[in-house]
Structure formats: C-alpha cells, structure tokens
Amino acid sequence: MTQFELLKTVITSSVFAGIISAVVSYFTTLRLKKYDFKTEYYKEILKKRLNAYQYIENQIGVLKAVVMGDDKRPFHMMFSEGETKFLEYQQNLLVAISFSLWIDETTVKELEKLNNLFFNINNHVHNKDVEKMEEIGKHYYQKISDLRFSLENSVKTGLYNLHDIKKAFKTKKINKKRYLTKE
Image (cartoon, rainbow, N blue to C red; front, side, top):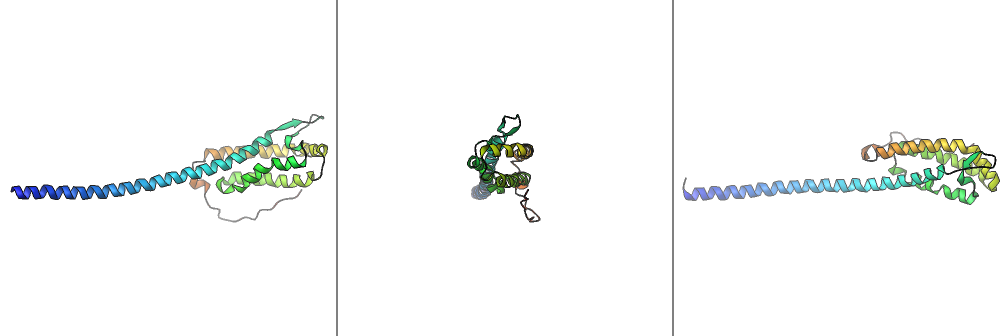
C-alpha cells in the first residue's frame, strides 16, 4: 500500500466515521428530546391531577368536622352556621367535580353520590333556621359519614395509582345517563 492510498484510506474512514457519528448523534438527540417532552407532559398531567385531588381532600376535611348537639347526637359542623355557610362548605365539592377529567373514575362516582346527597339536603335546609338545620344534620350524619369514608378510600387508591396516566385516562365504553334521585 502506497503512502497516498494509506492517506486516502485514513481520510475516507475519518470522514465516514464523522458522518456516522453525526447521524447517530442526531437520532440520539431527537430521541432524547422526545423522551424529555413526554416526561414534561407527564409532570404537567400529574400537577393537574394533584391539584384536583387537593380540592377533594379539602372537602373530606370539611366532612370530618363533627360537633355534638345538646341532645348528645352528632352532626357535621356545616349544619351549625346557617344556610349560607352550609352552601359555602360545598364549594370544594363543586370544584372537585369540575376537575373530574383528572380524577379516577371510582372517585368521580363517589363525588357524584355525595353531590346527589347534598342536592337532596339542600332542598331540606332551604330557608331553615340553624336549629332545624342541626336536626337535618343529625338525620343525615351517618349517610354523610359513610360517603366520606368511601370517598376517602377511593382517593387513597387514586393517589396510589396517580402515576398510572393510561389507567386514569382510560376512555369509557358507554355514556351512561346520570340521574339525581330525590328523597
């Protein structure tokens, strides 16, 4: 092999290696950017889901506040401050329902049950004084507590599976009509 052929081989292999290196580098960078975008997307989805669960957590906290009446029967504190405050206590529930896209399906169903119950309770507390509201609260105490307990367990499961984006965004097969039942 002559000196010229040796130089030609070295230059050719260097150019060829440079081209291969550039192509590999380009595709690796492209793939890493795609992965980075996907990671950032999942972070944003998780932030939205955590935000939605925060409103549910606030509602659960409201539902845990219990007081004892003069007759030693428990009722939730939201019944002790009048109709206006009673409606204010439900705002977290309404906001949480509005974020239902980001919440798992089981938790959404529990929120809907709670919403249905409060729909009925709202019909009973309308224009009632605090004393009558407390009686209504005593009547619904166990039902609210049971729904709160179910909601709390559902939220725990939802938070445990928070990272599972595919499971959370699984589309429904059937669009079921939702009815509010009146008591």
